[in-house]
Length: 187
Length: 311
Image (tube, rainbow over all chains, first blue to last red; front, side, top):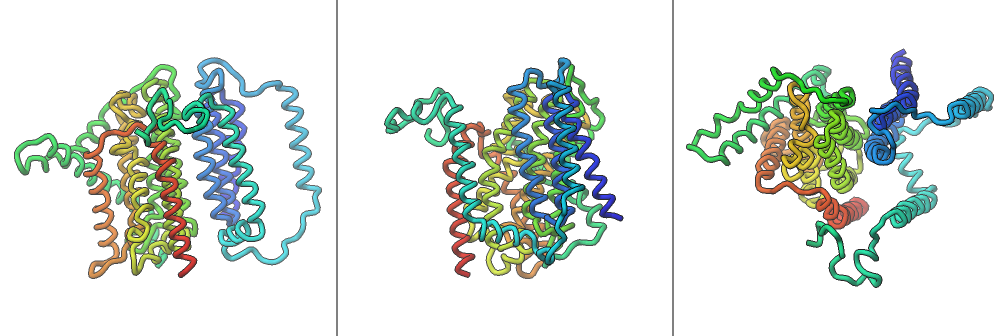
């Protein structure tokens, strides 16, 4: 019974605030509605007994949404919702696509032959997760991490107007970077 | 070691934290009065100043701004003390915390991150350029301190081989972590200041931006925001005790007394220390944090990992 209460208390706001993301016309509100939804999801993951994953979801999503708010405000035409604006574009097409995806996923949930549980859950899921990541899946995680990191660096290099070659010269041997504002650690 | 406190501790926790915050604010007011000079013994009279200021704010009318988003602003303001109290739930007094979850260290960090997002909301809410500047400054500050801070937390957890705060304390029975993880400890203290946008890290509420994120807030709104900031300082500084200073371990005195003494010492150091340093601009600290602090804390974590493996 208490489990059910916790589930519904978290699940209803998760879905409701997820829907509100598309109703708000302010980027700040939309971003933080999404954050609320993800916090509830984090709570549900904790409820499943996966404490570490749940808390990490809360931690990472908070940081991520706070940063995303900045980018959304930078790039959207109407960040503060002072003008009438809709978050939804191509309404009919979007409604059709999302309804189809929903039906597909819901049908999958109902129709899939879910396997029964074999064995017991680990006594310490955090430890089990760590051993799994650092043991048999180490190579995957290392490759994945490297690929992600390379992507981030490559994106920043492509996006930035002033890279290291602008700052330190073509052969990177300038002693002081040619910055419009003098940087902190090299003063 | 990892006892959970009785239920009444849940009710008591916010009041205990608030009382500590008022005491620390009083100490700060005394230091401020002493810095201004005056006859000996006189500065002590400034101790109740934060209480007076709080009462005055209670009677003040909250300010409204044109086309603001008071909902978001208020949520942001309220989140600051709420996140501080939620983070305080894993803070052990002696050897007992309100709750001691298996992932206590991560929980603490997650609540700190909530406070970080909250200040941006508070800056966004009033639709005012100066307060928005303050909110953005705090986001930039977070980018600077959060990474070394997380590595410092990780190092302490690594030394104890557990994410449970109770076990981190138990791991320091013989030797405090501060002794063999000095870099992590120093970085944690720095980020405790930054977390509470305090001392050299008070640019988000800087005078050059007319008070930054707090610029447009008056009355109860302002009281909750500023009190939440004191709570954050108390909680983050207090967390350095179980993480690095051995928690309740110590000779002669009972565990709760040691916790209290150590917390008071750290808070005193932070409050007094901020008077020695000028406000830091965050783009400078970001570079320092990413090019100096992150490699240092990584090396520290490596050293601790080797010790743990050899143990």
